[in-house]
Length: 176
Length: 204
Image (cartoon, rainbow over all chains, first blue to last red; front, side):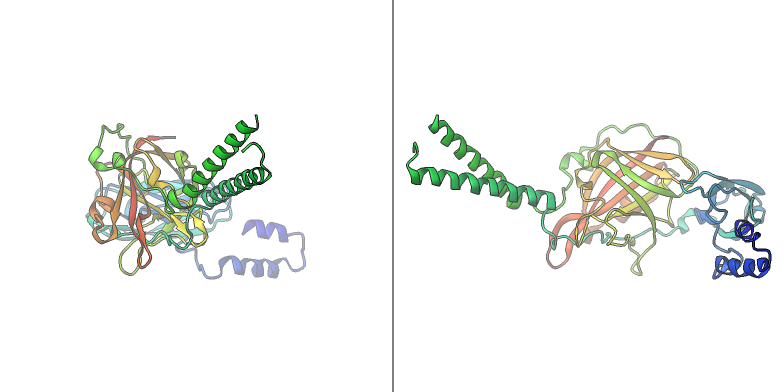
């Protein structure tokens, strides 16, 4: 946001309107940045640690986290992710009540505010586990490994060449 | 001299014929499947478990023994409650169960990927060849890499899939890596899944 504004500051005349226009797509469909702060795990039991991360603060951006809604106070989000996402941890107090809490982070640069939901449950048994097998292949349609097929075809080509050569020699009566 | 030449040509021809035929028809057309030695029945002593890490979503999975190095996408559940799968058209993309445990955290983290797609072998094609003691690395968004050691590699039929054993919670940080396997039939596709069970043994 600030970077956008800085880029546009040279064009003094339409700076204000252009800034508004440029800002519009950045915020389109995400309103106040709700959901831009990802919380892992999204469901915790009191006493557990949770991680918040966001890409909204840009590359190598840091942010100030606020988990006071759940009684965990403030925490810092540092740029630790592989793409420079800001990541931070907090501990849900052992006395936290079950419910959904809004966790907030404010980017150090640009003052952008992002939020995410943390669900506190009394037992971790509420977590839903997958059931059954996983459909991770089609098979059959493709036949063997292409490298293996190529090697097989090459070997048969060698065999055919060798056979032809031998037959040639025999036909000429060479040493057979 | 000429006779030796003929014998050599005949030998090479025969060898090429045999190996070509074996490569095309004899070596089996499916992905490798785990041997009995890697299964739970042959359970041996495990490497000591490392302490759990704080939760952090994973970004990549690496299995050096299989040459696997793939990004991870978040997976949910299908309407029937089974684990969803990554898009099939991206053959080097694996996924992790986003609503579950993050890899390295206490509990059971789940990673799944395709064994093949319409074009050929995919990210976990060789999972069935993974050996006990091999390392699975999960690069996490907090910058750490969780190192898991393979305990067993099993193959399960889809009709009797042991949900609790595969997906159930664990008292220490564990990982499951799942792909298709267990034979193939024209009507139903792969009959089950190959599952690698691993536990956290280090952090980098």
